[in-house]
Length: 103
Image (cartoon, rainbow, N blue to C red; front, side, top):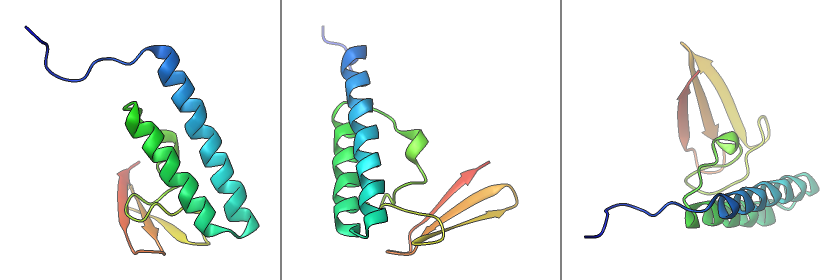
């Protein structure tokens, strides 16, 4: 009888994927600073695809990208962050998407 659900990934695979995601986000940041927003968006898409492939969560980057348009977000440039009643509200200025997170 086969078990339901997903098989667990080996720790080495998860570690390698996490390093790849971190590298891609660093490249996205460098591209955004250089003024190339399309390249930054492409790097974010690659990082998310890599994380999804091995089912890796990337919570440390939750406020660095938009889940709707995959834009790399920089506070004050193309995103705003407000705190209202203990809830952190992140708004993407590219597509208008809003994400909320309890602090």
